[in-house]
Image (cartoon, rainbow, N blue to C red; front, side, top):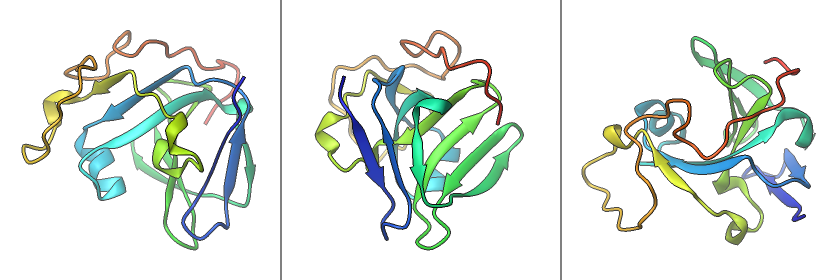
Length: 145
């Protein structure tokens, strides 16, 4: 079991988990692009209770059923939660202390990708993130947003 840790830009918030992610992917949707200011956002999915936080995240409901966590001091996006995947929290891979532990398994929302970014990997490319598009989305169903 590999411990994963991460932090925001200013270090006011840290997270850690000692479990493997349910899945990991690059998201190309317009919502994630706008939330991060980047052409693609990379995520790992975990059960909410498997992630431990130091520091107080702020939350923003970016769309119906979607809550994004961020650092109020520096603005770093840290997490994504959706009623679509109850009990699951998606952490931004860019916040990892050791980025080499991120192993993406797919691209999601490929149909929304930006035309100026060339992607040459051989990962599966899903038009959306419909159920079954990602290897596993089996969050702990007893937690709520």
